[in-house]
Image (tube, rainbow, N blue to C red):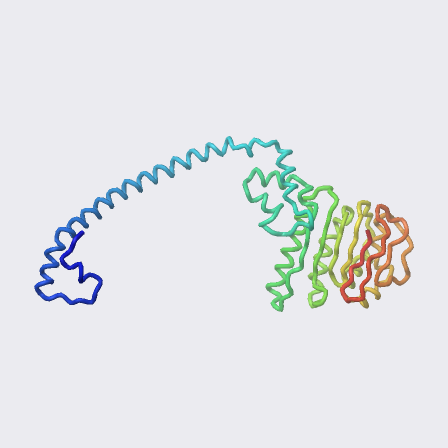
Length: 288
């Protein structure tokens, strides 16, 4: 659009009183047209909004019906179960996380939740982590109690499957030994089905509890104790390993275990392999 003030537009020019009247007169028609366009756009927007509303409702209606005939709903239950099992981590045990299988699978729909809860092998591995120590006991204690309850519920869903379990507790801070003991005690009832276990906890707590437990563990294949400092482990007596005898019955243990040793005697299906030794304080003690 041409304008008699084109050279003045976008500048700091101050029009005279006469020019102000001229500009106002010049803008009368464009202003009316602008209002007309705004009104027309508003009417069209109302029509568009109405069409969008109708379209959204229709799409919801169609999608709901198409979901009934989606291929995934027609998969046989056993195929869905196999898919669920493939979703499990292969390089570690499952963790208590809503972003991973198996918990995530139960949050998709009620049908998947029913399948996941009825599939024992989906719950046959678990990594348990002790909550971070806190000076606020009112905060820390409920976290431990919740972790213990989840552990019991989780492993309770595993039916009669062989279990792969790992427990990670603080090796340095023993201000809350009761919490660690509660987590260990939650695992003990499932010991007859242990297949692979990895305990990372103060040895005094692990072996102190094990020395009073004698349970048959016919499926046990691998045991790893990450006990921290070497002197702590050397103070453990053979009686503290009473639970390992349950893997196949009684056997003669070393009177004073060193930082690493092979478990002899009748412990099939265990194989007696001495663990690798390093002079560092953190040492894994393995029986596989």
